[in-house]
Image (tube, rainbow, N blue to C red; front, side):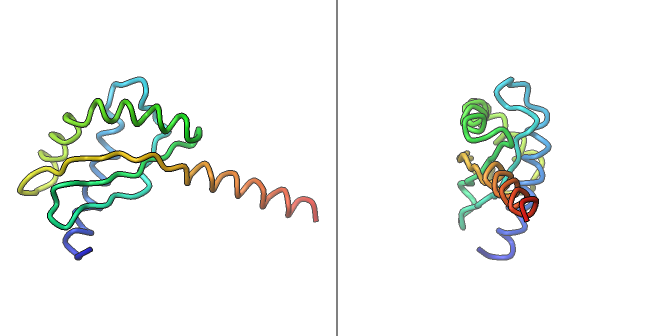
Length: 114
């Protein structure tokens, strides 16, 4: 990934975080976070990895809301980030936040047991 694409991906991530807060869909809760944004080299598509603290099922439910709001999200990103054309978004469920929380809990149990 080039420096320009990496910078654009970071800008898109920042704007998506703000846009997610304004969505009125009840499936998209406030505990949704963006794990990673992958922008294609030609900037026509963008894969967004989304995770929820409440687990994978809550993330999958939020994905339904995000997919239904994809047009709105694409338009908002197009208005906020200076690009020739706004990328098409694909949202992917990622359980890394819940996984790391479980891992931290197990490590704490091990250290308390010693």
